[in-house]
Length: 229
Image (cartoon, rainbow, N blue to C red; front, side, top):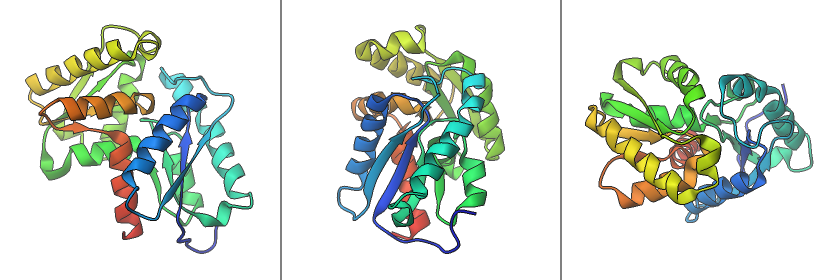
C-alpha cells in the first residue's frame, strides 16, 4: 500500500493512458477550468509505452500496467503526499480498480463518472464514440456499474478515430450526429465516450440543446463529492 493515511491537499492528479501529451494538456486544461473557483490544482501526467490513442480492447488492457507505473512513480516522488485524488483519463478506466485497492485517496475514472452521471435518476442513456473496437469494453463497463438496464447502446462515427483526431471539425460533426441518433433511439442523455474526445464533448454540449455528458466534467464533479467540497 502506497499510503497509510488519507491526504487532503490542493493537488489533483490526472493520468492520461494515451501517450499523447497534447491530449493530456487538453484534459488538464478542461479539468482546471472546472476547478477555477476552487483551491484544487490539476497536474496532468502521461503514460509511456501505450498508443497515442487507445482504440481497441487489447490496447486498453495493456495500458493498465503503464497507468499503474506512472501513478505510482508520481506518488513516490516529492509531491506524492500532496495528492488529494486521482482521475483516470480514459473511458475504460484502466488501472482504476488496482489503484482503488492501493490508495487511501479517491481514484475516479472518467468512464465510471460519466456512466453514473448519465444513469442518474434511472434515465436511459447512450454513448457516442469514434472507436468501434471498444464497444464491448464500454458495454462491459456499463454492466460493471450496474447500469445496463438503462443503457440504450453505442452510436458510432462513420470515420475512424485516427482520421477524426486529425480533423477536429469532422470529429465534431460526426459525434454530434451520433449524439442525435442516440437521442432518437430513446436516450435522455448521451456520453461522448473518450478522453481524447473531451474538447469535442465540450463543443457539442455548448452547441446542442440536449443532455450531453462530458466525462472530464463528470469526473471532476465526482472528485468534489468524494472530497466533501
